[in-house]
Image (cartoon, rainbow, N blue to C red; front, side, top):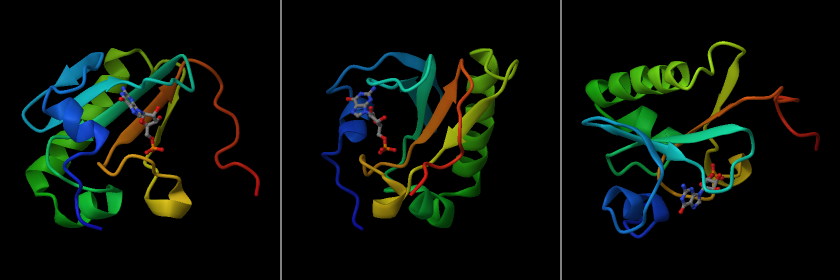
Length: 120
Ligand code: 5GP
């Protein structure tokens, strides 16, 4: 799938749509989800134009991938989510339920998070 520069996270990266930022560095931006599914629900996105986890893991540079993983762990710790535990999730493609076609990691925390995957 080609990257759509008009997706909502691209607009957030360009500053065209506001976000409640929790972290930013050279390669990464993180902000609160607009429709939180847990007391803590943060989205972590690369600044590069990657459609999905599949695209990011295959084509991002080692530097981008390392920065992204380090940042996601730091964000969770900075939010205190490591104390009682948390979940990271990357919905990917149609069956994965991905709605926004810019790679993002969800960080959920702040309550028991239940089953790993919804029953069919
Ligand atoms: P996906 O289903 O693609 O993994 O998740 C997309 C997430 O983006 C959803 O949890 C949704 O609430 C969030 N989202 C969609 N539009 C916006 C927005 O404009 N701002 C923020 N902060 N989150 C958004």
